[in-house]
Image 1 (cartoon, rainbow, N blue to C red):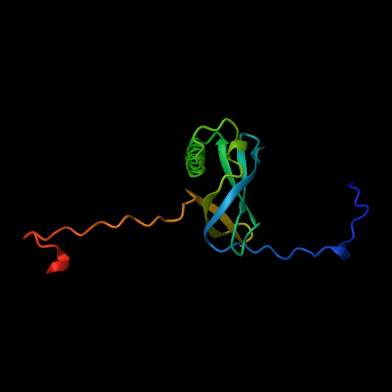
Image 2: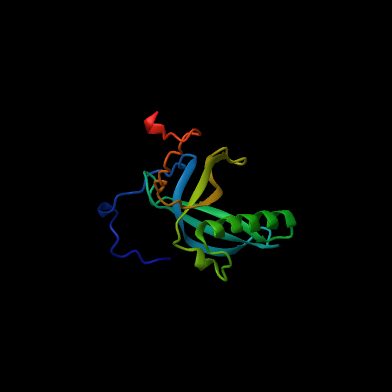
Length: 155
């Protein structure tokens, strides 16, 4: 039981439905991470919580689960490759703890997927890339003189 003394729902706007965010790429940070046991108990996964930083879905949370400790070697290889992509996207190549990946901006690639069990549409984080800096204007190259030696502006 939890003490809710002092809470008045009349003073707080209720949350609405949480429909999935549209498929796309979103600037986000990892706001939380935790190792959890698998449902079967035969391994564990790293659950990462991503928070979208801007746009109409700012503040929304999405999750990814990385099967880093699993009897299925393929699942572990996929999880390690995904963790590598995350590390490269945030610029921390050899973290000692998942907290080192927190609060560093990256771009998450989100898709929508229909659940097999309920038919409900949910989000999946399916890729990661670095946050790109604003494009710099490339330096203007002077035009090369024509083969006959006459500059292009004097033709």
